Image 1 (cartoon, rainbow, N blue to C red):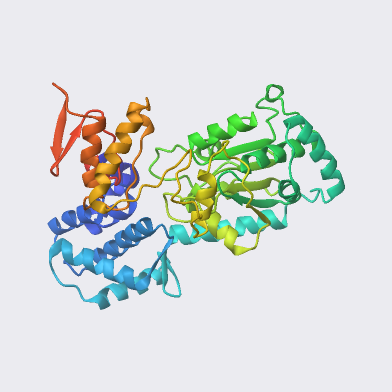
Image 2 (cartoon, rainbow, N blue to C red):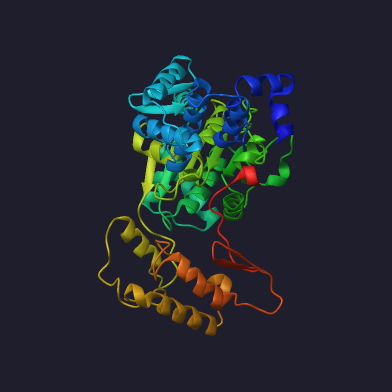
Length: 457
């Protein structure tokens, strides 16, 4: 940690720590306000000192944005959280007006941004502004040679269908043609609606239209492949590569970003190519989207693909959902379900629930699902019986997963974890285990890590 502090401040390290130790919690990942406050106390900083209040404001702004997933915080919760942090750390009352005064000064110094009652960190405010500016740039200064001839695209679609062995319906054809004709395009749809099939169609038609050879072996560093495929995660990129037969990478790798670096780079090299397709865009956060759009030259076409109802990015921001709501960019939402296993009812059920509906046959046993009504006190027994039956049928324990909406009670996660552990990973002689918070952890248990605590590694 000391090395990271010195690398950030170099020869000014001691001066900064003595003058404003709260800067550590703002500038250095892994140092919280609480840690900086302990240092400040040793230097005699009063509980109501301006530097301490500012440090608490920045920490609360950070905590609330990451807790809510929003890029801003409403003013009242920010003041409440700041006061709570200040008073809990030293057990001394703080005048709320002092917090209000520092918020005004921080805004005047352009260290935070405000919009009505919303307070932004300068980083997220600027990122959102840059995203809007760059999308406008791409939309208005895009390639003037984009096709606008449906008859030509229809002919190319027939060729693409022959190549891919696919018969596209009218909705899919419309999506492919609209994407090909747009400098920036949004494609959204739930599971099974054919997004991947349409990506293949877009690539095939685009290659035919621009006389691009899809044989990757014919390209090198001096003559790069003009179609870029990317996704926010390695798994999504791999799936994209497998479904298209073309190289795909994570967004981080495409931009040359080291995912383990503490901070994102300020400048990114401009991408080379003519068409960029980004899959699973709902998982792309605000800061990465900002960098990505900064790297896209004005002549490059961009297609963002994703599911508006999928969980948003881990980091603050729901860029893809906001873009769809904005009605500014050309878009297409797919609603018809294509991908479904023979006799499967799960995708239809998922779409019904998403629309706030329960099908009439919800409680009727199906080949791939069953509904078992039971009281809370019966649930653990029911889960135990289902798992035992699954194991007896030869299913692997790795194919079993249990989701629950609460932690406490007979039907809660804590109780279920104990039962699942005895069923799937019972105690064995000489097996290592530890007890933490009255819960036993054994080698071989599945553990879901919920919170990062960098100060304790």
